Length: 269
Length: 346
Image (cartoon, rainbow over all chains, first blue to last red; front, side, top):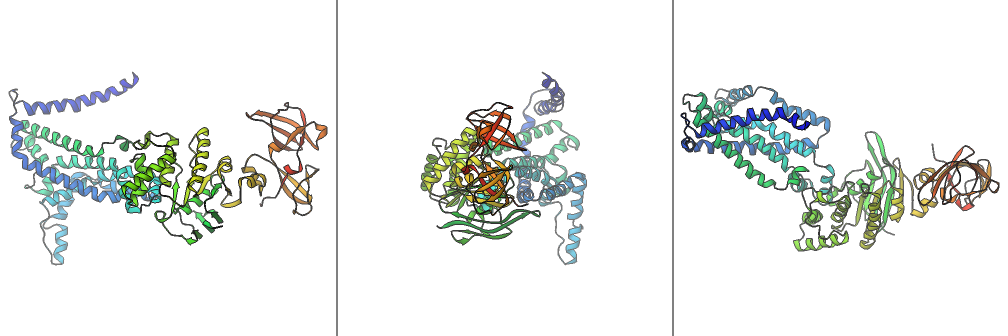
């Protein structure tokens, strides 16, 4: 009874700030301004399919790059001396203390045609290269902004792996590489899963990174949704249905991902 | 006889603290050897050196006569049963046991056959598909043993493998381990702090303390002829009383002279005298050279354990008959029951 009472504020919070807004999004997506049920808005989303494909592609690419960069780092980090570990973790988290916009602006000044990198390259007779306003810049921005969310869950799961299990693998004939493949990788699967989720979901719905680093030509779903609410083509109904479709896509991808992770006991270990 | 593993002058230091102090140890082939000692005595460190998980600061380790310093664990023909089993949580019973064979890329048919043999050996037939987390402690222990033995190592290292089991299961597993060792005819090197476990299973017991080997011998030797007070105290319960060796076969304890069987300590040498509690009999005061007052009586199941205070020393006595608390009794023991040891250094 007491427990239920303690949970009450959170239930109210969830209802007011999660459930109600979701219902409102669904309402806007399926009813026009006169309150009549329509599938027109959802159908209209189809014309933006190229933007959806680009968003999924760029977010997936950024997620994979984050994973490839973070995995060895987390592995090495977890093996380090405890004192060094906390310092290194600090360095990983430190950029997150700086404002998100500021960090992205910094990349603009670095990557621009007259930016620092091109200026330096100019001194040795190279360039200028077009780096800003490309898809590559967008992916770079995503990787830079979201990589801590990949490193932290990987690091956490790897510190939890019993050292004696690694010794056992060694004892049974595995060198360090085989131990990594046969033991560390499967045991760190839960960390990989949560890392992918925590990078992919914000990356696919970001709008500021693509706007600042991708120029006008690399619109993502996030930009599209923003335009429906704040831009000239004001259309909250379409915006709501795009959001709804995006949610369904993320849900589908996450369900697909979890198929690799069927054994619940592994997650619990 | 051929020595399968030899440690020569092994030294290990951690953070300036000496963990192993010039250890020399030869282990015979097909023997059940136990490294016995209190925690921190260096027994696990010794095992880890043989397993290849730790490099000694100095000293030579040989395996079948060949030096194996620097050879990584995965290249050594030894396998380990770890203290907390260290089973792979992402694999089931079969996959855990087959792990080493899969790494060696043996044909699947051969793997199935050998894992089957192991499942029979440790009585786990029918558990192949079972998840590790759904096994009891005793079953996990068996999987750990099978996982190590399936690789047919020349030497099996066991690091306090029974520590987490309850008493009854532990006794069963002791007999089981001895049976396995004898049927496979391989060398077992077993680490424990449990003296009873060591005496039950071993061919040879190595008693260690503070990075030094105190005594190496058969369980009977170690129990009956402890070389110093540490061994006597650690193996079983004992009364260790200061005495003076007056001459060969005559020792003075608490001002009285006793005939004993020990020789070669010189004349009038201070020594430690060990008398096992079960070797002492209680007699009427007038029949004994030593007598005292019973200060405690505890029922222990098979016997009573009594403390008799006599001449500033608390004698521990075990007997199937109890004496009355506070009564005066005589303490009696024969020449064979007296074990003389050199005084411990320091």
